[in-house]
Length: 113
Length: 113
Image (cartoon, each protein chain N blue to C red):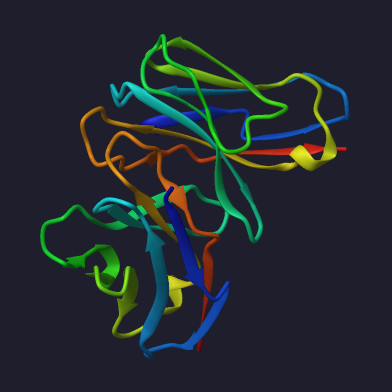
């Protein structure tokens, strides 16, 4: 079983709909992240959380929100999806006090029509 | 602020030829540096990382990278390309273990038979 699990893996939705992407991990890491991948733009940080009570905005947080429900769970919400939020979304974890090395989930592909 | 520049969005090599993927970074402090690989329709997995120990770092699948502080570079090499190396490669930097990784835009490697 994957250490970092993302659901759903694929989702097609319409403009204006609320979408939640969920991430759970069994690695026991305190730190969790959401990145977005677009062709030619690499991975860009949306939000990150260093522990359950800590939430930080990343480079491209506008239009997104997050919730850290537990050490093992970190969800990403799009309150009102728009087509330019069509992308591949990755959840990742890292260990506190380490090098920042990230451990990634398999990704959630979101298409907004 | 940290940043990463990957020279060449697409590199094509013949099977058996040298692979060289270029990465230059910007960091105000000695960085941690990473190379990740993404195979088609998969998540990202770590190839290798530099954490201020040896400047020549060996990774999985025969890849290695050399940290050159004077050139602010961390280029990825493999002596002999294999068809299975076709993938997208991302260089990433962290100024410390407490800052999220910043990724380059990626280089897609094609291997020609």
